[in-house]
Length: 288
Image (cartoon, rainbow, N blue to C red; front, side, top):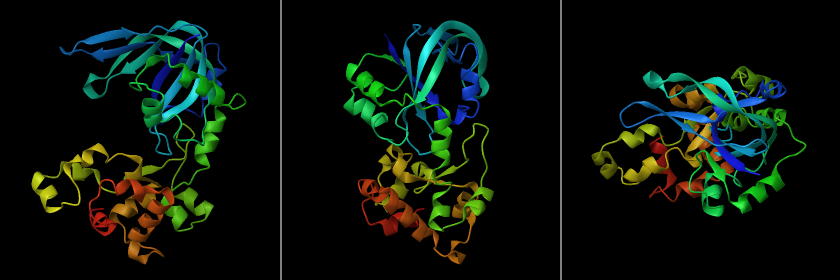
């Protein structure tokens, strides 16, 4: 039996309707061809070889808990099904007919454990060279996942798991009631509660000049290497996110600095940030 790793984007995945889709004749269709632009800007096709009976592990980015990890396991039930698929972005976006594999019996893998099969673990513990699409030949990794996946679970468990989490870390700190929190956000088409990501140290810091980094020597220019790491991001409802940027938090029971400090302490973020910030966090908050 063969085992495959397939990268996917949580934001683009319709978990709300996936159960209905996998009950169909074909199951979930996933492209077994990939179109890409070569050095001459011509579209080329790469074929991937799959086998019926093979096992697929989906590695997701943009997960609501801010992790990147293997989240689902499925079984290949058919190959060479035809479907239309979009490749590329912006003006390079194209729609191509492409051969697909049919995947059924999708099950979640360790929803509560965000680290066991995340990027660092796959690379450093299990020895994968990349999280791109590939056949997995690491017996240790396969044996571990096959032991851990939820045989009695189903795709609906994914929606329930991520919707039971805090709608907004700021709302939790301010102890807003559930009805009040629900009014500040909405359910997306894929069934998951909508949240937005706020960067503690703003992304525009990466665009600062060399002179700025010289004047503000609590940070070095390598900030771009970690600006999007989990410990620099918090989850907020859309209303709180806008308040963080434009609102007057002095009228709240806790000001913005106090809220961020509580979130950092709860998530143990400060321990990671100390590796990158040369002076104390008071200076850090001046740059937020």
